[in-house]
Length: 265
Ligand SMILES: [Zn+2]
Image (cartoon, rainbow, N blue to C red; front, top):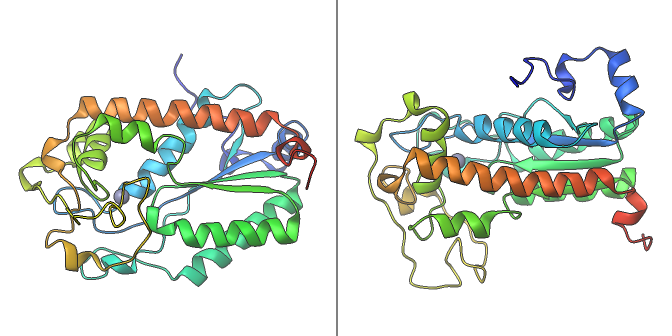
């Protein structure tokens, strides 16, 4: 069955009365958060924003009824490290955390008891976690930030490139699967990173987070290997990400907040 153009879980298409009615049966909302930043010479700057909005809708669509609310996606994120490349539009950590904090508090005042912040841009993670902590501190509701944790392990099993973190095999594949007309494969180059240390490896389970301006690691803005990307891999990656997120969102949605806290909160 074709999905509706105005599904009942998308906050922006509802009237206040419809939202009020749904709030009596749904207490879970997903906030997708992306970024507008350079994605190499071969991908558009909207990849993180487009993909996280798409992911949130796909996940909600596949959840059981009543489906969780999905908020309009936040386009901008913390991307200062890509500033050397035109097209990058970065906001500060403070601006993003304040914005998400205000939004979370507003959702709580509406009656939302569980917020899932779906993060499409890895470098938003510390800022979104900070906002989540502050929302939880002040509103006493469940707030979490998902930056791929539910499926990263499986996604890395599907690809060949280590440290494939930006515009590489993963993101080029996922874009080929959804919007091939926006991918300029003739401009894609192998920019595989090798730090020679499993502790500095960005995708290692033992990796320690560290921060660097992209320009110091890559002339093209690519960090990874887009030449290995295929639409088929992209479809598999989407499938894995959506499947795990649906399971996770279902768990959160179906649980009483008290059970999520194991009654110890
Ligand atoms: Zn990206």
